[in-house]
Length: 171
Image (cartoon, rainbow, N blue to C red; front, top):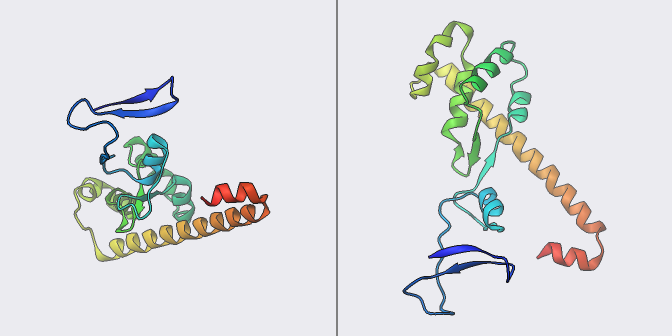
């Protein structure tokens, strides 16, 4: 298979080099991508995508964690070790990476030396694990509120659009 953007036709073309006759229907597998990746790479999203995730922005995370007095020190550590990338929530719940960050943030200064154990999945104590789960729940609730607010704004904007534009956007 050869795939590329055709400058002359202005279309993305997928050409089968063998095995498929012209105008036959084919199945294209884009791989295990969330809707953000599908939109950015291919220009579409799918309903009920099992690979869909919501990305957790660090600002939202810090807002949820703002009561922690040693948060600045913890943020510095997480940034230095590149742990703040790809923090996500899916229909299965918070990602392993997000939960690991929350477990690291849960550590009091007296337990900082156990950070590698956290990375290896070792449970430290029930109270810290409970705090991590409760914080993940708070993050999810915040994401849900943000999404609801955004949908309400979009709905309001749609109501203010002229009919032809509204019909296009509703498609």
